[in-house]
Length: 435
Image 1 (tube, rainbow, N blue to C red):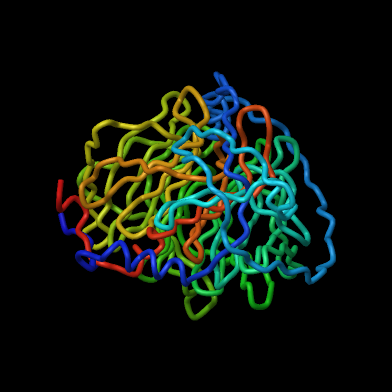
Image 2 (cartoon, helix red, strand yellow):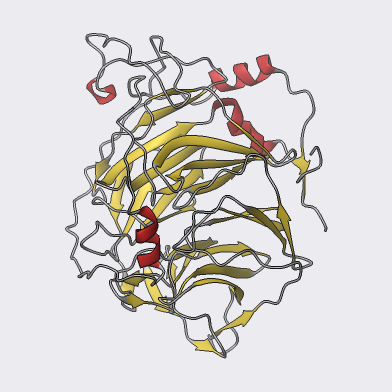
């Protein structure tokens, strides 16, 4: 099987990383305290997965009109870190508050060692999104585009944009074709366009493809020619070499493991054509609420559920040879409704459900060794959750919303990657080369 390659600069000195980070962006942080609530016993999690994929009766939903807030232009300056805290590492103690500090930090600011990662709960302004789960968050330019989702009662079709420099939310005024409220869909960024496929609302499952041009704020329902994927949600999509690929999900009757792709540019008549992709090597088991992360010319499929079982397997698909390889990783860690984001040679798997409980862990899969790693993480960690959205922007992982079995969230956290933020700039590794 062909391997993907990136270049890795050897022997990068830690003091150089520290100097670069110290000279770079500084920001106001929340107190070094983690939410260590009692573990949420959630025996309904797999039943919820089954409902998402049509294996049990889903909830009835209705549409909503979201109110628009006026942009106030409030901007916040970033300040340097102060005071000392204990490490997070998925369990941390809370330091006493320091009187007189900025109210935004809601108490004590905390200092982490320069190369260390830390969590912050972020204050935001403007037209904030409501509480939501199963939404998407996509990076275009300096903005994070949040679309769809639901609050366990109401499904949304609004587009919210976060300016990651000012932490200011706006609700986009869109025109063009009407997009139905949906959840558990996909939104794939290709240049200045978002390709939104599938999802559902209540008992409905969708198979339409919509394209949003974020420069004009115009939605277009893509005209299709030829065969197309069945209606589904809880699938994954990614962009590679001119195509938007689609894998898995559930169609209302069963979990799926088919692979489709559509060229991101329409034909001369403005139409788009899906094609089912034949592969070798044996496909992964049918599943939804997995992750599919592009790494060079390969995609890493991890976790998910078929409505009966929570998976912990990892599969690689070479997109040039269209050959699957199934990689045993010891120990196998089960996850569904998680996120998996590529940062250099690491796959950052954040939160999700392990088949028994919701998690707030940050797991790091080192792709050259195919070994799981953990790190000490400082600051204020999110409560355990799944069905959230996550995106990498400017050396930070943004985590938005989600659900913990009892509560739907509207909060926003950042995981400051510190020295790890330099990993995307130091290419070159081969998946599994040091296994």
